[in-house]
Length: 116
Length: 398
Image 1 (spheres, helix red, strand yellow):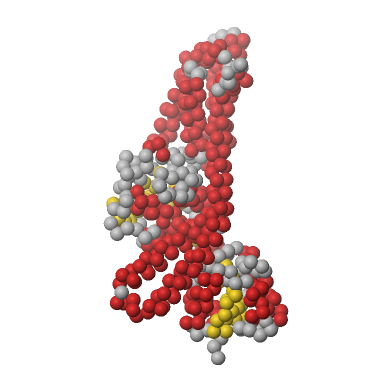
Image 2 (cartoon, chains in turn yellow, red):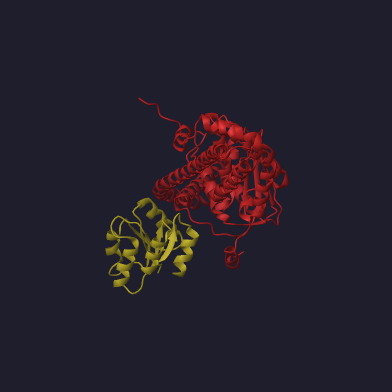
């Protein structure tokens, strides 16, 4: 049973590309372009892995991770961002996610998903 | 309607310096002139004895000899005049030179005072006249020395204003750059990931299609270059302090040459001892090298030669010289090349050299465009290591 990943990015093309790359690596993927669109896909049961951009139209990716983690015990999460300032990185970590800088190094992403 | 006064006319008016004052100084000249040499010797002896002031003089005994002669001529001119606008221009130029060699204002002040005290002393002891005459001439002397100080201070102030303006410009540009940079990252992310996917889909077909492969590579390279530009733009905005540790210069230069994607017809001659290290932030200094190499490549229009040499300096610093045999920088532009937004290139951002200078200043070093007859030659000077680096070196990974 392949691991399922939910990818959230307001740039749909990017979300689809990430999904395609991950499915080549054997993951089953779904995408969403906002946290609000992602929540019903993640709750009550959904993919075990969440890969989300930090900056989303409504609530942030970090907020999304926190929301999901509050309701589901087990979810592995990665927050991505082009912004690599202290505030963004801590927001990700405090929500219980790993942080990945953009532009995305896909090798790093794979390592993170395997380890997270 | 009264015409506006020049700066010099204004301050002369303010201290009460008139033609009579000029005449009084001319009377003093023959009396004071025999004493110029000992006054000047004493002046430079005081500088040599003071480590803080001595630092500004880098050319050794020969330079001090030249400076002494210059100071004697300065005193001649001060007493002989004429104290007109040309005088003011000349004194301003001298002031700007002091600013350029970074002589701290405090030293300049106290140095001037030294001369004032000596000249007053010479006047009082040697002028065979009645006390009123002596006072008249002393007043004129004090006035001209105050005027000299005012002119010097004005040049320091102008320099500070220019620096401030440049810093503000860079900061504003930085803010724009940051938002643009971040916005661009997403589309570039899509291009990069689609490229990756294209290569995956084409797989082995690529081997038999060199043209396709070539263009995919080209896309990849240019995306990398775009990413680097964005990275530089964001660095510009962030303006983080250098994180210094012992870095091998040769390897750093070679890494920069690779990153700069230099044209094949451009030869790069690297004369850096393999064991030469400097206490620098490697990412930031690599950026300087990339900027200078890229500028050289553009100036050479893709063919020509660039030499990079580096050596340790006597005071444990490091000097790096990067020069090319291109057309060089036109004389009228030379003093502006480091200004933010100044560029002579059609597609230049005008930020590269301003960024280079900012990085060098953050390292307490300097970058200068040397006066060469042909080509362009940039000299980077890094000072010796500082105490705070010792922890960095200890903690840095190889």
